[in-house]
Length: 361
Image 1 (spheres, rainbow, N blue to C red):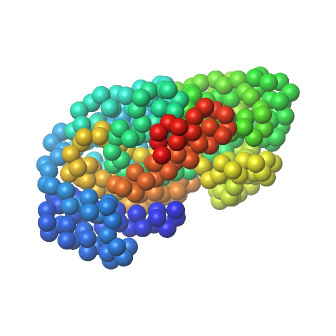
Image 2 (image 1 turned 90 degrees about the vertical axis):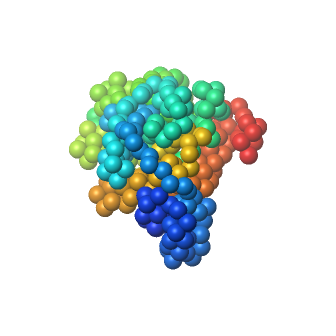
Image 3 (image 1 turned 30 degrees about the vertical axis):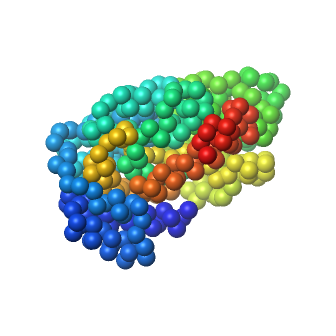
């Protein structure tokens, strides 16, 4: 996966000039040559750079963010959109549409015309909607413009929490079923997903309290409204460093460099290894049916903004592993994540059907 990410990132640089130039026959040759030089072979993603010419965009673009202001998704999308709009020559107006684990934003974006002017800026959640019966949509109903990255998460408590280890949370929850509070972003959201894995491995159950974003779920823990939550590194690292929030363990089986002093969840409970590696991802999408030349131009703009050193520094500071995927590579990633996660949640008992039973394989 790391090699694939590096190849995809290098190819994204090569495709930018061809896509933004309009991509006629000569640009097809240029893209093919550049891709061969960078990776040794051409791919479906580089071939996509040979789409037809387009004067898109002729007006401002709407960016629909699934989660609230200040959350992990919001923090990644706004600076990337700011970079891409400079390349496209039109503003990308970002708007937070929260609620129902991101499905309100997803449905809204899907209800707009397939013309490239409505971007869905989201995380992993739509890949679980059909399995959970949330709405009858997933990323199969959209085209991936650009997948930004994925990341590791951890279990967090307030700085003055009585819990000094993840095992203490589990032991308390087993002694008082349903009384220890877990702040979530709703059914199908990140804390809910990890909560399902925790139940599968330990048997512990929690009183889950939903909030509209990971930022507000985190604030609920810092303020003492809830006992703990599941937090992305980018969302919790500053609070952890400042001493207002504490990572008890990382939901990972490999050390997280910026939080090397925080134990891995597998240290206390080795059975969590069956779900690793796992974590949320972020991407930008347009409705299926959008003209390929428009998708190509958007992909090129976001790829160029993604490669900017300041944005790469932000990803690194947030401990987000860069993906830089588009086209068929992005679709392969999305399908793999969906199949693995749905089958894992089924194994955990959180959903009653496997991916195969849902017709996804």
